[in-house]
Length: 379
Image (tube, rainbow, N blue to C red; front, side):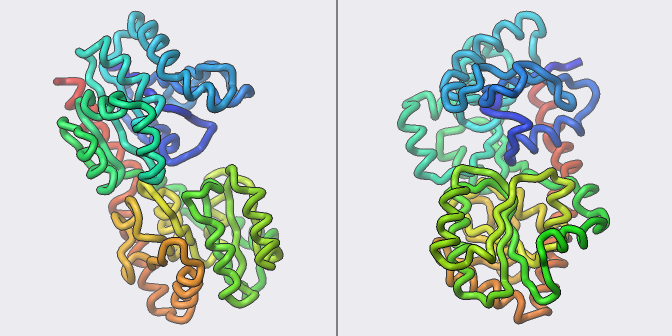
């Protein structure tokens, strides 16, 4: 049995692209691998230790959000040393060059013989990343230069890793979609339409993911002014911008056309996606964009911005449409184009779904990660 220690700033039930990726990949890897994960506790109601799937999760801190994150590099490294003396880890896997990555760096410095894999999942803007890098000084780049191997979820992050001085091999391993889950039938979709009061003539714009500045949901709300009244916007997700977005909808006079619902399970989210007509996220930054891939897999046309990792899967006029950054009218124009050209809409849906099935299934991605694990553990 080979033992892998994972460092992540957060983990499930807190949901983001990185957390889902770790769960989906570890669930598909061979039975000869055992996983422990160290992260910040963040919320008091989360247990200090539990098993989720195949991972033994150790949460550090008192449940005080930001404080737990800031202290994770020291607390995490200390716990890792204690666990290593008992379990003798064969591989250390750091998820992102962040607080968890710093804990992994400290562990690597004390245990240079243990292979160190860094996975880049960052979706923050370059400005935010650089501000964090300045605060960490030389330790930020050391997270890249100390790694024995780096996987990046997009070409954008591949280039970013190289730009931070990485001298080890770097490989693109994207995030993916649970194809079995997202390609199954449409049971329950009509009930969702009734719940949303969606009439036959309505066009439903949907977004799934955090209510955060980088996703620019305010621009979708502003875009409604340029669209007929039968165009409505639904967002599924939690985040710090909830109150601000509600106030914006009221200010723009479109509050009756905006629905900001809480995050739901993947099973429920699929029903909402299938009840919608177009997925839109006018991102300011994006590591890759799991939500786009999920929408593509269920057969929903997508509109995004040409930033970060989005161009890896979105080709204008082939698998989706691009709108301009920070431009609500451009969003509206692309939505109008989509519904004025049925041949184009069908082309985008077919091509995007095919791409999701061929390139972004978790089974294929887990196999790629298994190869990386095997090479590092053998070396």
